[in-house]
Length: 169
Image (spheres, rainbow, N blue to C red):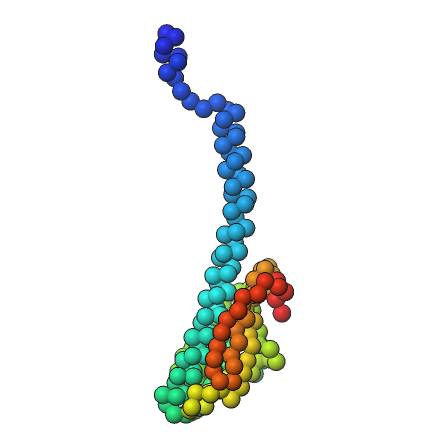
């Protein structure tokens, strides 16, 4: 091998390789928690939005059918649950107790609690609710830093707010 051939030989030294690996490890250490928070936020938002969609459907069905419609927590997908949280799923029932919609249970480790217990929401034929409710959607295990609060007014207006208390009820 001549001097000119050695000058053209290129490669990485072990020191350069170690520097690249250290920088990559630091970037992963910073990125993983942000990704985990983004993933948690997306799951909480999806659950809260599912509840909002169900409230809006119950209200519109009450108007369309000209009859009372009830939204309640349900363990079996056919009848209202007397206890437990909304994370077990919920149903929409018409005035004759026919199920209009079923929502499945939330993933393990997530909670959806209602202020005041597990009370059904009822909508009158004019679209106004007979009751109001406030729901907190959070991660119970492990506790996340985010929560979503779904507020349903007696008029049927529904909105979601984001909190970062990190204290799942």
